[in-house]
Image 1 (tube, one colour):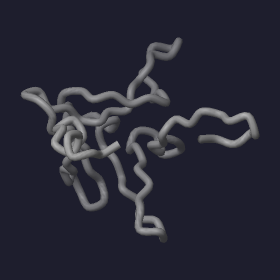
Image 2 (cartoon, rainbow, N blue to C red):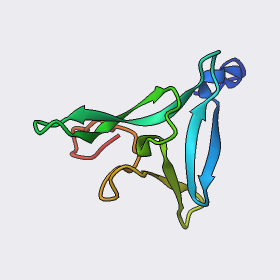
Image 3 (cartoon, rainbow, N blue to C red):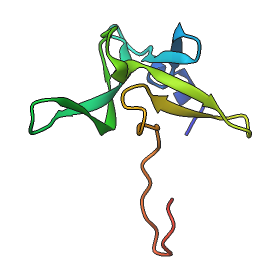
Length: 105
């Protein structure tokens, strides 16, 4: 919740750094070690690195697709945020908990 006190928290402030038209790095400005929103990876059984379904904030690695995000405009004025790493998956969503009626909160 944003209140008078929390509105000053730098941990809630993010900047968009344009890489090319429509693709950005998303950076948290909190603290002396700023961090970039990064799609986490896991090492597959064949040794290759694959995108996971989680994100974290890490230091800048300019060549990582996991730190590149597309902002896709929606008709309601909002955006879908999509990871450049793996074009078939990677939309940023808020994890939802299931409700007793079968829906999500």
